[in-house]
Amino acid sequence: MIYPIVKFGNPVLEKPAEPVTEFGEELKKLVADMFESMYAAKGVGLAAPQIGISKRLAVIDVSFKEDPGAPLVLANPEIIHAEGKHTQNEGCLSIPDFRENVTRPKKVTVRAQDINGKWFEKTGEDLLARAFLHETDHLNGKLYLSHLSALKRDLIKRKIRKLMKAGEW
Ligand SMILES: [Zn+2]
Image 1 (cartoon, rainbow, N blue to C red):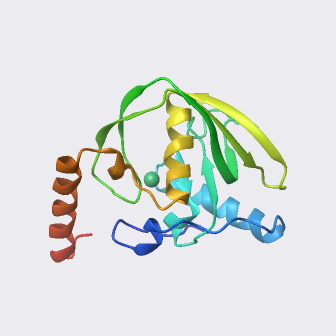
Image 2 (cartoon, rainbow, N blue to C red):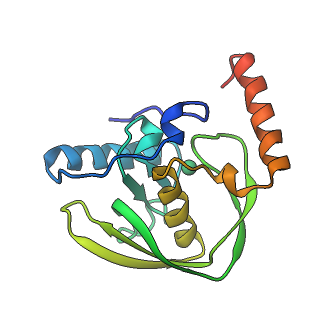
């Protein structure tokens, strides 16, 4: 099932999500739906709050279906190590049609539970590191806008408010 993506302005995106505690069939179905919704929206990462579900759960596939080993499920993820700096253009499915350069750590280790509840650690660089950080931010109620200068952030928010008023958001 493809869920519609929740857009900026919906409070679910700006509150910390609840931990995942049940690792059963329901979670498996949700994860499958999240991958389907992410691919349909042409994204490489999706956090549960982006489909209106306030759970600490995210899916990532930085290969976008190219590498069958790439899809990752992160339940209750935490960034346990970060190093270096890397600036890259970044967007968010919940803030469509906007992109900005965001500086984030270059290399990151995440600790998370998989779909069966088993804890694992994974280190990623560049785009994968960025995805770990971006999705973990979502679960803490944080958007990439918070990493921009106040000036840039306000400009984007103003443009979004205009779109909202025009009924185009
Ligand atoms: Zn996002």
